[in-house]
Length: 338
Image (cartoon, rainbow, N blue to C red; front, side, top):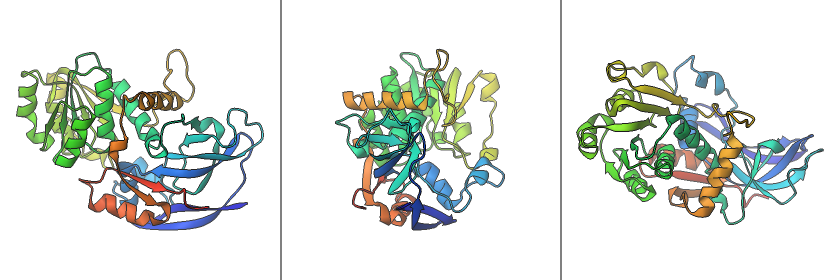
């Protein structure tokens, strides 16, 4: 047994850094010494604040003690029996919690290519979530796209939409600092307003046709009906991100009268194993994301706002809650803990 420091939610808006015992890796597992982890600000702040309705799957998931985090990059420092695909010293991305060390299944690790910094590689988890959503949207070359909500996921949607050949990418968010990041990521137009106030501008930008695909990346119940109004006839509205209060999201008459397609996308959608019919597993999507990073076709370095010592995680979450409009990517640094 060895010791590891880990972030633990012990109650609503209660957090501790606990030192816990960690068993050695078993068959098919590896021990990873964490370098850095990215806080998924949307998901983790919902969990931290317990900002969800009773009876939702969130309510079943967030039980105390709760261990947040699912975007870790570190070094393989221990091998369990039968592990042949990884070697000691390799740098890997894995869906591990915010902790100094983690034991994970070797099959759930993806080797990080040389040349990609740790802080950029930590975006792999969010990048695969967004990539799944972009695939479900069914883009075609020349699509006009609206992205509502330019947090972490929204910024990545802008970049993937650009890679997918969108003609226009219209970013909608009240926060001008987020819109500036979106412009640098490839947005062709930015609207500093609510989704409800964006209709006229979207009409003008699209010649009255409205958007082929509208992404609601907010999970806010007031945004969904406005998003439906921004989609063209027979267009698509994609819900990316998991609302804490889904019972408050309501359809409008636009869905029926204009034949809209409403699509949900969730991290649990991709297949566990690649087949000819369903190739894009999490691992395959992560490898593609790393390919885009290596080629310079995606840029997440600009999205990193802060790197904070893992032992100061309380400060990191407080920053995300109080400076939400200006802070984007907060990374916990575990590299100084030995």
